[in-house]
Image (cartoon, rainbow, N blue to C red; front, side, top):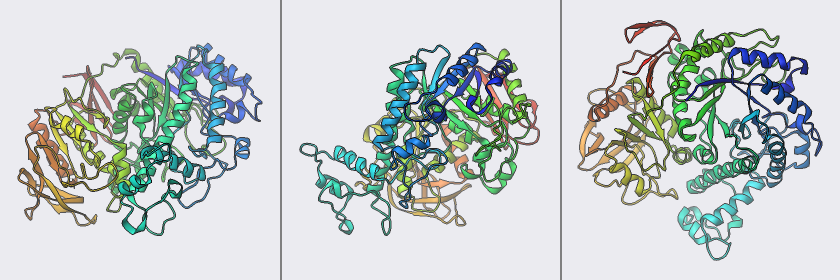
Length: 640
């Protein structure tokens, strides 16, 4: 696979007379792809039915004439004022019952049928006009589903759609649904919450205390399905007019909808990578690591999403927006350490990216993102990120094509589990992503390359370790497939803890075939009260009291077993700190005969089919693989 570069461009922001110069400079830099159009609805259609195509026709022609390939976005993330005036109830409503307003972006409700009709109309117009255009080589639907907390909407449109969704989930005679089945599944006998009719069911907000968790989980699943349906409506229209691949650009640590379900309708998954922007508000790094990696970003956060979106894209994925300099939206916005833009680019390629596109070509001198750096300054002078992109382009000319390879370790990621943890975290700040990410980091610290898999995966051939922590709803066929996989299997904590309607099952969890382990009770721990484990490390956050005759692998200092095993299945009953998870990874990799490497702090490696990459995320030199690796350094070598 050939690795390529690109950028995000907004011709509507710049004078017509500089478009040719911009395109020529992009081509000279070594770029292949240019994404345009995803926010341009008001310029395409400034009034209902008044289409202004000339400028977009010219922009696509100019870019194509320079040898560049266009990724054309649908503009549905930014409905213009006149659309909102036509549909004044189309705005999403937050959990406090307040409607969102005009003046920014992503201000629509996924359930509003009037807005969906407007989207189908504008996407049809664009697809019919540009579907046959040879310069349009890929598509992007909308922009960043889930950004700005915009998946969950508590609008009247969502309420009506949710009731219809529930009728279909609990079917009865005709189209009425079986309300008794819903009451039984949700346990509505508790607190006299029973309904007589689906039209009595409201959305799970503005309740006096917490709503029924089964109700909330159903609403989360419904909300995700609304995103899938919204995206599919656009995909179907584009695909009828174009053979070019269709993508969507996802975000970091956004779990509000099922990305796998959206990705099933697309050819390519892309995501928007902002390592410095994410460090303080999404990674969960300690204050010490936030300072240490302030100009480099977390060593594992981008890598995790590269692996995740490779799975979402069924092997095909890009970085659609790569941070090239300071951003404008994080708690603090430092400039990247020199060399980091190059490192982030090569890191994405090491994880299998087909393309890395920098956001944006030129820094905007106006509006909300005027302090967001681009490859060019607002005066068109090159910015530091341009120089590093130019270096990567030169290096790509001599680099071999990417050769994929299956990793020895697989980690299953489940969006439904993320919603389940959100519905019932049982402790402040506890969430599924954090648990999975902590385990992922432990494998990476040991120099192990991972794949991330869908929760629908049942064939685990070739994997020597499969980890599936925290998946609260685990179908019996998944349990059986993991048990019969031949791999070392790691489950827990909280694996198989609920049935599909959020009831604690009996026999008690995990009820795993051949594994005599029962979660008798559980507790969550204060951040300042971790419990030490014999041999090193601590359990923090989440602790399960385990019973059973399975082999004890680790136990607490007071004798409580915390890791139990039968055959190839290991159950971990606690959320470990770094030392605990490092020991657990060492135990599993030893059993699976996987080589590990004690990597220096901030150094990571990634194996492909033919290459090994070393990355130094530190602001100082380290010695690795017999070489001195400088700050933000990258080493590419033939795979041993």
